[in-house]
Image 1 (tube, rainbow, N blue to C red):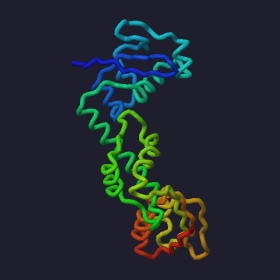
Image 2: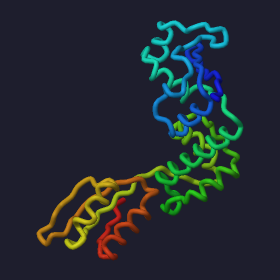
Image 3: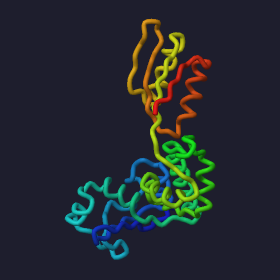
Image 4: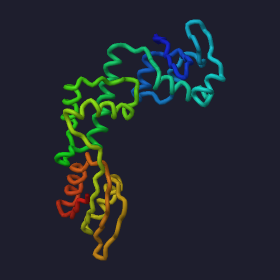
Length: 227
């Protein structure tokens, strides 16, 4: 049986409500369902769903800049309040926490050592600082708030790493896809068949990139770290 609940979104002094299946709404918020229209129980946008009072198209257009119901439902689900179970809420918070930790670990370094912070270190400090995670807010939108709360305990700097590499001819073709994946900005094929390239990527990936290139070339890659 479906569990019909009302998802609500308030903006610019206006109220927007939709009837949704709570389990399907949770699946949509966690990425298991891609089509927001599979979540709703009625293709209507309400001002007051309990009273059956529909919201006017003019106000829908004013707030959402569209009357496309798919886009409107997507916004309500992602930015509004969706009634979910305590267990579902806990899972959503855990998933958002992991996303935020990954973003910070990938893009940041310790400004004192220039070394990346490990995800475990970031998670530990977030726990110590008792950081609250919004289960409905986009992970990227929460990063700056999280950084403000943990910066006192863990100095963090978002940075970009730049390196120049020279790959021996025998490994050049094998490494080309990896170089592109990690942000190759320029390439130069030398007369001896080796490949010289400049890469630019989030500083938190530095160790990962160096390990990957050393592994692919059996340690024969030449690497120059550029400040």
